[in-house]
Length: 497
Image 1 (cartoon, one colour):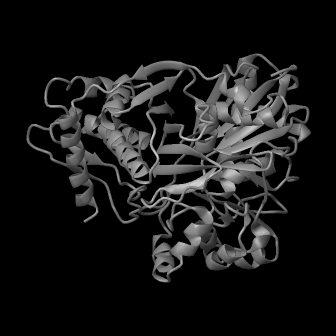
Image 2 (cartoon, rainbow, N blue to C red):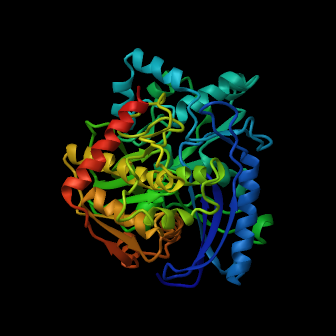
Image 3 (tube, rainbow, N blue to C red):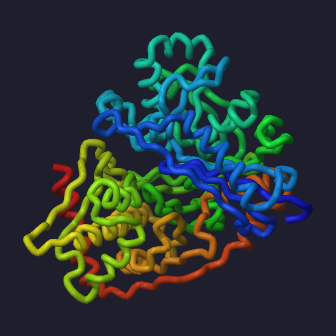
């Protein structure tokens, strides 16, 4: 990286909005974060206030610059990374959303997805998008908004409305409504984008009843997306990188060669394996998706999506009151080492259904195996173990598809838990590498912005900045590993009815 300048990364996640300032060596100089209100209008429904997202983004950017002790003049570029699949539809004239954002976790369109499958459309959809038919993705959420907000469908067809994932909505606001664009990684999660042709697919728009007039331009992940409105930072700042959160983390983890895999542990868990220029189609309900698109060249990935990881610990804290702070979970789990472990207790956190490899929108969470001896500690440990069991299911599916990895690079808010990382290594029978910079999502957004601004020569240069803080190697005997995992599979079968 040559020349002056820092990079401001906006990381708009499911539970919080964050901004981080990175220097030329990829080091984080400052961070600011604000939690995001979760809105639950009904069973399996999850929404966000898009205006709150925007206001929190403005606030954390200002705060991060203040904490870094630098002004906007020192920022060479802005990168954006975001919760994927979440849908915002807004009025082009006013910029105001017509409804709350419908979050990726939302399951209100499960019935529509069943109808699409019953109509025999899943094969065609999957062939073009690499995705299964599930409420997780954007398309059915868009159609729901157009059908349920008065006048929305008419306005959409007349070109008066705009759709975007969160990155697209923030880009619109940051540029003062001048730019309606997204990147290929986010477009690939809408179920409207042909990942092979790298274009919006007319047949998919027809299937999902989404007017083309709603859609943004699709650009490379490192590209010229415009500049911020001068009123926001006192000067226009180029926006030169956008990537969905899991793809940004793949870049931040320097998984730029085929066969490299990262696993992110935030609200959910997402494992992404780089497959290079090959769009590998899974036979085991994993997703074929875009890893990134740079210089017009698409790199693909195989992804497994788990809906609930850190959200289970958040539920233990906020829903059950078993812990006061999330870090307490490690001590409670460790206290049962050498005793009976989780005591035969399994927590299946299917609060909004099950993701890969099951894709069961109707499954619901359960705690199984409780006895009179079960304690809060057993339930807490079972919640942590559930994250590792679900990851094991994803890795088994990848192996069945003929791709595997000897190591996995981890990141996200949960990976500071040493007990959890050791249990993960044990359950996967694989080395787990924790990087020195665990905020890989924001760092990946910064790297993409740096490439887009010409500050980095490319992925090889940013990959050289990655370093490992600690490796966890498997210690659990194979028979014990399999006994525990078989118990998990039985528990999952129970919640699936």
